[in-house]
Image (cartoon, rainbow, N blue to C red; front, side, top):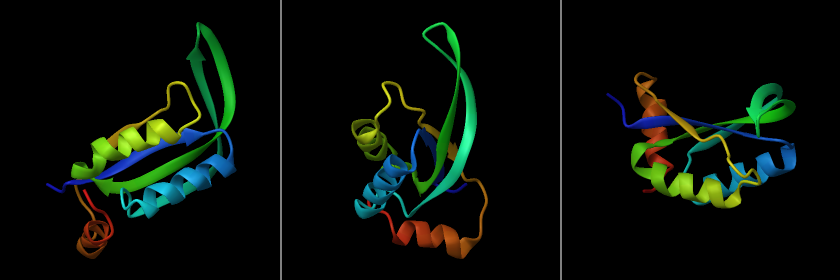
Length: 106
């Protein structure tokens, strides 16, 4: 099994999305962050149904980077309770997975 992770978070605007993506890559906590265009999120917050446009970040990293990445993401994120979800990458192109290793530091 791979030690690679796909970490997801959302942000309200592309400016914050780019800033956070750049910082995670500069700090080598992520090899790559893909920013998807606005999606509609429907969720409950403070007992009310909310609907917002958000940008989805797909963060490619490693399990041994996750704790620092999560702390960094929480510190930079404008939301009171940001979505930070990590999904294990169980399969992938060997060269790409090696590239994630080569471009992240724990």
